[in-house]
Image 1: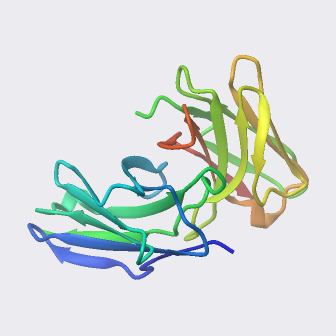
Image 2: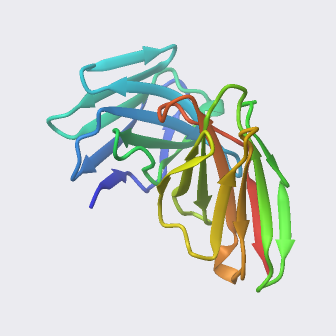
Image 3: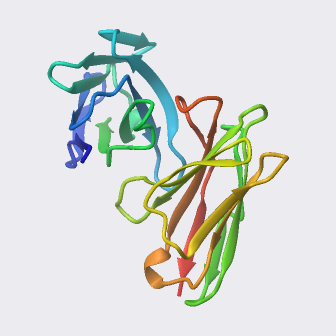
Amino acid sequence: SQKIEQNSEALNIQEGKTATLTCNYTNYSPAYLQWYRQDPGRGPVFLLLIRENEKEKRKERLKVTFDTTLKQSLFHITASQPADSATYLCAPGSGTYKYIFGTGTRLKVLA
Amino acid sequence: DSGVTQTPKHLITATGQRVTLRCSPRSGDLSVYWYQQSLDQGLQFLIHYYNGEERAKGNILERFSAQQFPDLHSELNLSSLELGDSALYFCASSVNSERQFFGPGTRLTVL
């Protein structure tokens, strides 16, 4: 069955550094991959979508890569700030599999 | 603010009871999705409606049902509630399956 792996351990980084989060998937070939941010007790918020024919996508301090050979996406936050502290979910999707979310990686940016 | 509204915000009820959660999608979105998120768990897809018709079902229990009305709002009915049903229930909407916009959630506590 389809499986998504995100680092379940929290990631602590110092303010100003680049945070890199990983999303690995197995047993399917998504046409796109989405990243969401979720704060405690709140609904996820869409951040970025990257398609299978795109290697990289950027939005302000965010950068996402998508390697369909490695079946992996990397999510980078540059110049991280304490306000970036949250859980980040990846969601590789396709026509058939569009409802699957990873369990998320908790990021804590230390001032 | 995602534009998706959910009511109520909190619901406390007893085992064996029945409750109804309500969701209004963003203006213009025809798709509504329901997800369950238990403590420290990932988002679990329950059901997807598109313009009033059921499009996909996830691991939704038989005690749970949903519908989408002509004005596109949706309701999730949970019956014969058990302690394990305590969770955050999110509704999301989208134009297509990409870029889902999540509501603030309903926190259900079953005592």
